[in-house]
Length: 119
Image (tube, rainbow, N blue to C red):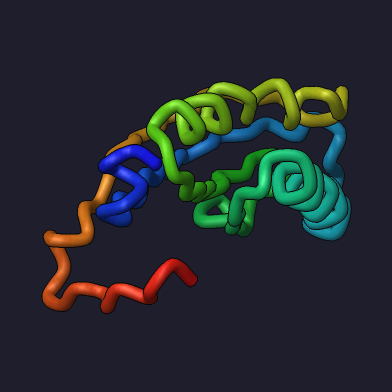
């Protein structure tokens, strides 16, 4: 076990994903496409996803995506795959992805977790 694992470092990443949905001709059609996109991201990458912008526009969407992992490499791999997973559906076009990755150390919080005798 590495020192990072023992200390409980949490690596996390967030992304803003701007989408164009050229085939959506109503908000209902847009929601159907977004539900499928959100499910694909969750199932394949294990991320949390929320629609965070352009809710009233038929052919545009902005998604917020969050991921946590035990390593920075794990976070980077997930963030790097967002576009590929989304664009498997030909009705979804990724316009831009803006992401940020960082980490949080156990000693950065107000209280430390107790040691659990190997459990």
